[in-house]
Length: 115
Image (tube, rainbow, N blue to C red; front, side, top):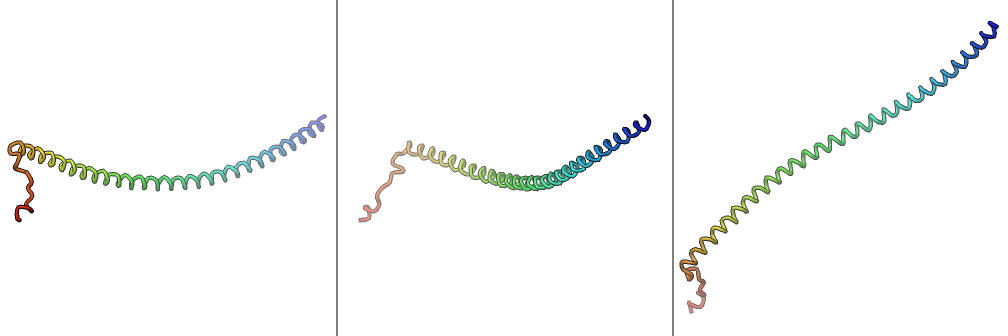
């Protein structure tokens, strides 16, 4: 009976070793697969980091251009507002003068007067 038990234990141990060896092979294959996935992911991370860096530089450049355009627009707008204000005041002065003396700004045809 002891011999039978030893034979059973030996057989069970062989099966356990075979199962463990198969499991080890499966796990090693999975480790290889995941290591490959890590390499691919690292490469993708590098590409995305480069794209982010490029995008950040482009954004910075666009912001600088936008700030310059904003300053140019503000300067142009100020000049136009000043010109409109000056013209408005000039119109007011002309209206006052016309009210005082309507003929003061009348236009005469001087080409006929010389003949």
